[in-house]
Amino acid sequence: MTSERPQNPFLLVLLTVGLLGLLSFLPASLTIGSMELRPVRLLADVLRKPTPRRGLRLPPPNGPAAPGAPKATAAADPTQPTDTAAALPAAPTEPNLPGLENFVAALRQTKATGRQTRIAYFGDSMIEGDMITGELRNLLQRAFGGSGVGFVPVNSITADFRETILQSFSDTWYEYNLNSDKIPAASPLGVSGHVFLPRELPAAGSDVVPDTSWVQFKAGPAYATTRRLPLARLFYGPGSAQDQVIVSTNGHRVPHSLPGSATVNELVLKPGSPARVMRFDFANHGPRPVYGVSFEGEGGVVLDNFSFRGNSGMSLTKIPPAQLAAFGRHLNYNLVVLQYGVNIADAKNKSYDWYARAMTRVVDRMHRAFPGASILIVGMSDKSSRIDGEFQTDPSVPRLLKAQRQLAERNKAAFWNLYDAMGGENSMVRWVEDTPPLANKDYTHVNYRGGRKVANLLYNYLMAEYNHPGAATTEPVASAATPKADSAERPAPRPALRPDSANR
Image 1 (cartoon, one colour):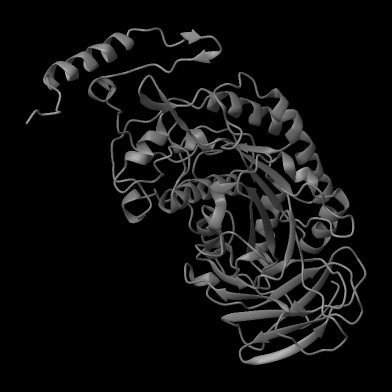
Image 2 (cartoon, one colour):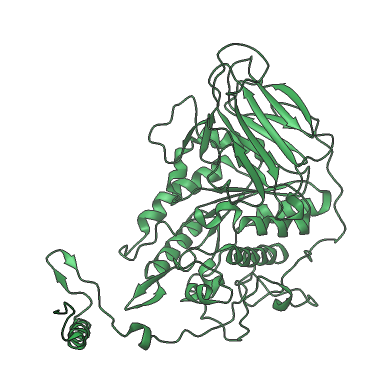
């Protein structure tokens, strides 16, 4: 019987390797017609340059530490990298910018009187599922008081994996969001970039029927400050005077009317004791926009996570200015954070001036809607692309960072260089290859461990501003679990809100 196997397999392998070897000598920019050939690097993994494993340092502070301040110990923080090498990355190419005066003043009031300080944190998938913001909220609430996860939309793609709030909802909601092509004027987007319309009941009546639109929230186990739902604020638009929401808390089921004809109305719900679970059933008899619920304490720090997957930041202009301002009057933000970049960074873009111009409209709207808030632009994180067979910092990163800093400088906003705080050039590679890893294998997104690390870096930057507002960025500062600039005494709580009050 004649064998069908190749007679010279060794020769075939040798020819293949030789052909690939010849292809590796072709110039990287070679094109055939309109198609650019990708470079062949047969021995890339063998000849790869070793990546120095340098210790991740704290972000550039805004002034020296106060005399006698305790030095931070990385060993006590489980989110710190395991590598202890002392080498530091090069100086930042885009220095931080001050501009957090309003936020710092609010924190001082919170420390002294217990008055609430509120943060709106807008971002893309980098903060999805309360990544980064969950740990940052926890650090701030431990230092300044406060509880709760803040604003939560009715529906969320993060409901299956977010650990700071557990959420379920019926499939009877109709949603418009930042990705919608046409948004009815009667249902404008809310501050989160979403608006939800519950199913309308066929006839008047206060009872709940099986097809009623509902949403349920359960306190998440991730942090001690989010394990209870002490106070809920439901935000909704105008609708029929017959509409009701049935709120189920601690075994009690209580109907509440939904009064108010403003574009944004509010119902405050304060259980007799902090709840673990809250359910909202909407008995609506006409169209009514519903936006979400904020879970918070009566003082301290509240941080709202407004993540939107795939967003570059520019689509925030889809939120009508009047609607944004209406939420601003209810929520009274002291700090607005804008963290975008991974969805716009592309090595083919040689300049990001167009992006800075587009985002100027966004920053201007934030200034107008939240006139008492500081604005913070978080610079692009490191992102790696495969170049000549190995992962390196994408060439778009420094270009985008430059545009983001210019955006902040021209619009009187603060700027924090996350790229430099991570460790600078090729830091994403080190984060991916750390043990355990701090980032995913896409060499773009941090994981939850990395998110906690970023949160600690950002918290340290904010505390540096708190202790030395507007000072030059010169040398490292110790992490401040308890702020040094004010008394360490616990603030007195502010007067309690009246339960079940509407239209604040």
